[in-house]
Length: 453
Length: 85
Image 1: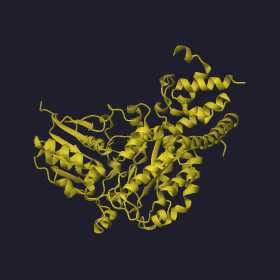
Image 2 (image 1 turned 135 degrees about the horizontal axis):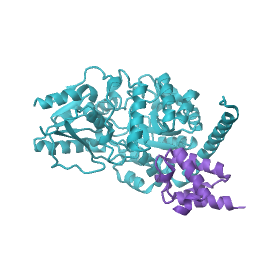
Image 3 (image 1 turned 30 degrees about the vertical axis):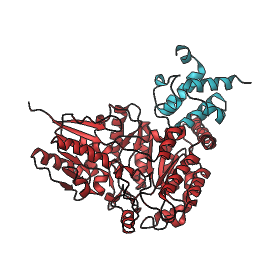
Image 4 (image 1 turned 90 degrees about the vertical axis):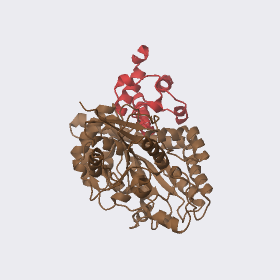
């Protein structure tokens, strides 16, 4: 019987918060922040998908270097690496070590999609596009000994035909949350966004049946998992979202996701979200400044949404769904006052959690082009500093150090005991209301057999 | 642990955690840290606290909540409030 070919899938280690000492110290010391940070930790979804596209004659091993070290002497016929830009430097080191042994290395993922020509100098083959469209060809060519340096996708992959991710590859390790994907892409075109740059033309969806089957499988394999829907924008097609949420209710999971703010206007979606176990929605507010939001996306969608932020946050949180507000600081209209204004919005509206990041000119984004033309990229900062919490360019109205200090100042003013107490009081009053309403509903159902409207 | 499983206040707390976090009741242990319970983030924790308060007819002060580390300590705090005149 021929020996199985050994495929190693490697997610390189990186810092997923600021590398600068102030961010690191805050992360070590803030219990409130650690609680939030922990929940959003998951595995590298792309590699788990690659695993599902690999035929059974391969012996596949998934290694998350953020959890366990890479054994560079491990038996391997082929290595696949992935990563965001902050993981790129380490991805190159890992590739070099395996290539030195004659093991071919294939790279995919966000960074490889953003800057494939650079990545191609460090690996044997680069995949630009979705794994479903490329990986079978890569494996075919590998088996023929004819790996090509670059694989580019033509047309979108049909997600309705995608096999379910091979979660069992990551199952042996402990992850507080399990990523599940229901769609890819986002209709918005924010100038700094790297995540959706490849999927702007068209959104891809899995069917509701597919998603439900995947969640059921995750439930079986992971023992009461906390599901994180990894969609770039969970609520785009509201009809589909409603159908999906209704189907999630009987599954009894707890979940979180990310979306733009517009779903707050739909009370049915809000109720279905709560009933289906939604705990938190990450919403990319980006800024509370009219000047900063002007032109941040091509259609000025976020600028038009700014006036709804307060009302939206209240409507969503009143349904028992925490708002995890994501803000990016350091755009050209931001000044040193922007930090205090942003922190005031977060606290006045009792956001459940926050992310305050430094705007980051990722390669391939329009913002990067502007910064390069103006000579404002800090060329001494390697990719490993592209954490979105470290300043990697010269802001217009402050120094890079002031940008880092300003964002960590927001964290300090939000994640502390005093504000956590105020926030707890606020959310307790919301939950009292919800628990009371639920009791009334249950009582009405028990006495009349009919649910209250 | 045996004595606590027959304690009605422990049973209430355990039942609420199990129901809301959607975990089997036998997995909820008195020595488990409340911030490390399966399926429980800060929002879920608040839902649990409010539901326990409703079921036991008590109100736990937020300052006291912040001093609680384990399920056992949460049960003890509830017991004190239930017994208070």
